[in-house]
Amino acid sequence: MKPINLSELTAADYQRIVNRSAGRDTKIMPSVLSAMESVRKNGDDAVWEKYTKRYGSAYASIRVNRREIQQAYRKVTPQLIRSLRQMIQNITAVQRAQLPRKKDTVVITERGITVWREWRAINTVGLYIPGGKAIYPSSVLMTAIPANIAGCKNIVMCSPPRADGAIPAATLVAADMVGITDMFKVGGAEAIAAMCYGTQTIPKVYKIFGAGNASVTAAKMAALSTVSIDMPAGPSEIFIIADETANPSYIAADLLADGEHGEDSACVLITTSRTIAEQTIAEIEKQLAALPTGDRARKSLETYGLFAVVPTIDDAIAFTNRYAPEHLEIMTSRPETLVARVQNAGSVFLGPWTAKATGDYATGANHVLPTGGMAKMYPPLGVDAYGKWMQVQKCTKKGLSAIRKTIETVADAEKLPAHKNSVTIRFKKNI
Image 1: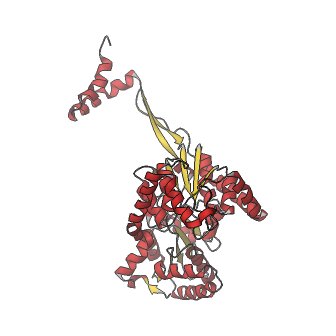
Image 2: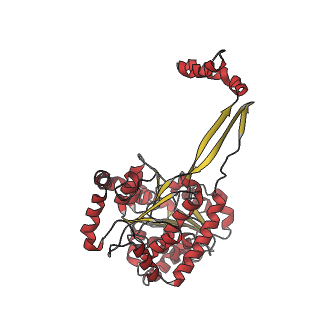
Image 3: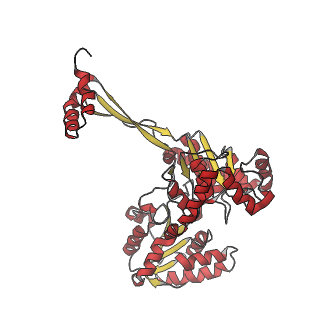
């Protein structure tokens, strides 16, 4: 790890950094499609084959039962319960503020014609909760709370079992605290396929939510021909803009907090100060020595990491918008003044006290965010993603008369006589 001038990046290194792990989807897609097709054809049997082969008799069922949830409560600490309650409170407050009005503004386009939209919750949604290298009760809350607020009637949760053939206790407790009853012990592409197509045990859903590894993200993209998804939310990434006022210890800690998610995480520092870059790298080495997850954090820094120096903050902002990071931290003397210039980012963290982990857990902001540059076109997960707009219009006789000639003329031009007649007939006498 060493600092480099951003302008000196080779074309190959530039593409590696900007593309990060997104390019892996094409390489793993054949195996992902094979797994999904197996679930589509064989349903539960495909899931059983994978997990009984891996865990043997420890994998006793696909569905989580009530006894497992009760046991989970006995395995977690009272402090975790209190922490989850505070998270539920804060996430709920933020998501309730995002709930769309049930009825949009009514527009009168002509006298006697009104057009408006009405918002409806998606009836059945699927939540994918990752669990391969870490435990994510926080992801349960981030995906389930907006579903509840939106009014989704059926919420299905899939999460991979661990070595004992069970979903981690903290994940089950979080799911129970927000009222999820349909929980299933299945992960990876098989989980996405099961929610996409439905099996004998796992219901088919209309939209799939949640982050995952590259295989899960590839499976979600493949599922798009059958169901909707929230966004491509793959391996985690952090991008930090810093000037000479930033604290290298904080920068290092936040880069490592993202890097410990996995070897395919992306960690980028763009700074106007070479001294800050050098001190950050030294601090990373110091903190890595005491980090149990240091091996994968180091690997992520070596694979998709970047410590780049730029002449001005303008250059840093320009590269930020090209990169479109999932998490953007701004550690400068006046971070609030830069927000308006950021066009592409999933979630923005301002100042030295707003560590990325604050948004991961407890500010109330959602941590399910677009990755791999998808922040250019996808927003953070919010309650609005759990519903859709239905368009409504009404014409009186006077209103239809006002647009009759337009409809008849355009229908003639498009050679669709039945369209024309459907309006003309309404003005004929004795009908």
